[in-house]
Image (cartoon, rainbow, N blue to C red; front, side, top):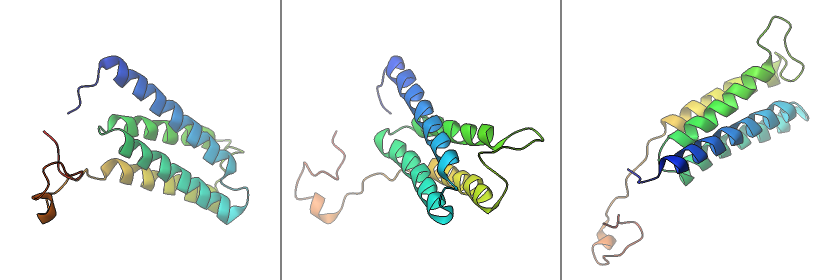
Length: 134
């Protein structure tokens, strides 16, 4: 557990949500620019945003808020009424973007945190970078 203050947690959550909205909006705008490559770059950007928040902040709340921002902006820009949308059309690129983003977000949130393991070379040095410091 981290000893982060409530203000730090709220600011981190707000930053994560804004980052998710920016990433979701950017990927919805550019996913079908040059069909296969724009989609690949968009999915890589989504994966990097989720993985980056999982790496930077130990708790899952930051990657959760990033995921809410990404999926929320993609859903809103895909069109939730019967008229559809001009940003994310229901063609191959649009459906792969929505499906790929969902798989990346669920995979990023469900990915477990592995505790550092003590190996035989950690026994020689008490202050190893892999061993958890008390």
